[in-house]
Length: 239
Length: 394
Image (tube, rainbow over all chains, first blue to last red; front, side, top):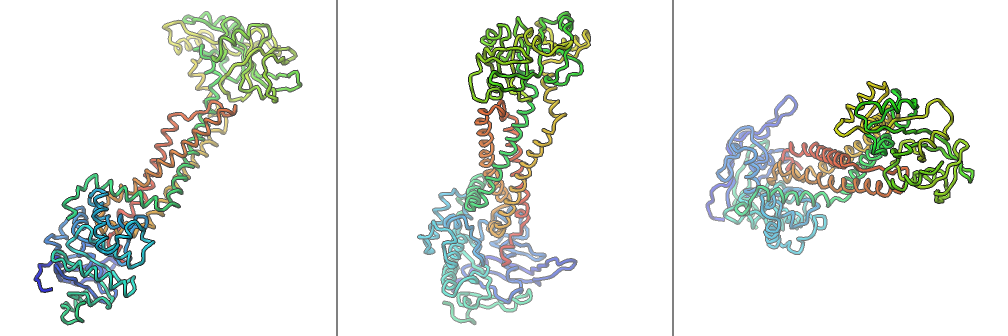
């Protein structure tokens, strides 16, 4: 992608510490990075390197110990909790490793949750999520329940839920970890399409090297630090 | 964008309530477990409370049955209406002489045994009512009762308990029974309120009743009094006590003394209190545990919802609405069960007069709602404190 996009999210000199008994464990050591619009950025590294912590801080589900976090020109570290929750609901889409679909809601209802929680009328929310499901090829499965779907289909429902309210930032935590290779490729293809939108940024945390080829940019982390921040030119050609 | 079209506020809460109820009803084991647990405990609480109140009322019913009398005068040692401690016949005249008394009539109440012509014997309560005014007869079918009792040694019987005398279900009117070697003819039936002794009550004229009871110096159990217009019964009762030295209680006071006697002298409050306490315990345990389990099993999902942007207030409303739904349905089943028990129980003389009082219905509702909402709040606190980032931790 050749367009030069402003950055959707920026963290600057972020430190994150967790208490551990009487001690404090520092998991992020003054990290600075930005996530671009119109690109799929992957955050990779070994387990425990801090990539999920970065994702949590960028998505406003975890606060930094110090440093600044700016998403869509909004300083998350300055927002009050209610405003932060509202910001997440309207501006960010979430995709989790274990899908986290509500088992007693059908596919359409699961995909409509961000809309319903934001006050969109039930029928309107279902119609809007239904269009997203149609787009993702899940139209025939709208009335089914998660247990009736394969893992790949469930993750596609999770993608529909993440995109149904048209967020500007989509964060994905190990989206293919629970999927076979073919399903993982299909899911990544959908996320890649979502990342093509110049008004949206997609951040994927993964250690699944089978999907690196979908990245526009890969940031490597180790021991709470960024050790490499490169574009895909140095990687295998993007599919 | 969705957010531009969204209204937030009440609409978002309504939507999340819809999601919450689908989450609940999609788990039928817990849903029906909660509903029937609450239903059972409501049944236990309201049914046992109704029986308890009914039993207490039985202690007051011999007094409440006599609607015409405003004041009961008795031996100072008497504590309740079935406790016979006769007073002298002169007492009647002394009471009549007290200023403010409109009328005062004798009333005898004692235990007796009847023998039937078929050879059955049964314990009864024998009541003697004033020969002229017939004050002391139950209100039901009063005119017929007054006519039926006029003849010598004629008696009317509480029709609700005739099976305790004639087990073959025969019509007792016209039957001859023997009381203390005196022949008495049952000339009619009446219906008296259920009483604590559970014995059939036989009504006769006062003169007949004292004539067939064993000889003793005094046979007058109570003097029934009505105050003149404009005279407060309570003030008159005090005056009667001052003048005669006898105990004088208003109808309400003596009825209350009857229930108080049961409370103080029987194990009924403890046994029924234990059953009602058990009902509350069942409700608390089932509701608290099931809701806690439900929340614990859905913790990850709640974490995901919080990450997505569902607020703590919305989650609180979700869990409370789930609790209220099972509370309403469970309460409805339980109180319906109590109503059915009491309705069909009316056919059984031993359950006659038991009612689900408004206080019991309302009290059970408040208690159930307090339990389910308290349990829901206790279980949801964990979610409210939940860090949404938990959903990213595998």
